[in-house]
Length: 140
Image 1 (cartoon, rainbow, N blue to C red):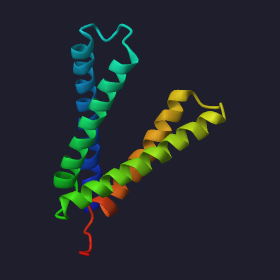
Image 2: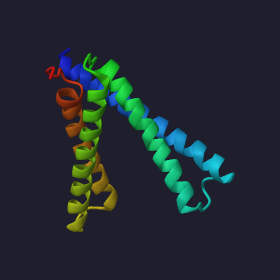
Image 3: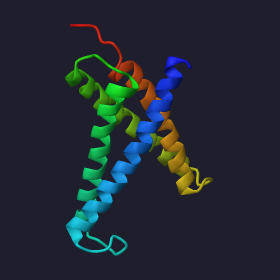
Image 4: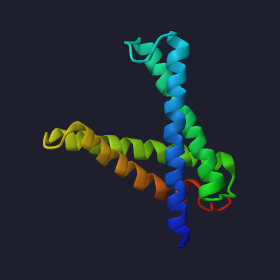
């Protein structure tokens, strides 16, 4: 199997694991912070904290697994982390732009626009991680 294809499969598996981890952390925090079933209305602050910590857990997991397992990067971890966060921010902004742009046409259901944004994010983020965040960097 081609190296890039193997990395793409691993990247997808890490993505699935990140999604599960994020969802579990959010669910646990919703319960711990509110003491109530998360099917009820919860305050915006509880929602924000649970969502932020959940996504942070997924982001940390993504960095560690993609750096060490998917791309087997030997580059300086601090530099890789900085580039990983830049790649994340760029991809997030672009996917949000796609979602808003598609939604503006009012031709597709909102969820379909979100799915298109996820596809853009996933493909672009894979290549930015492979070649920018975790690629071999020249020593300065």
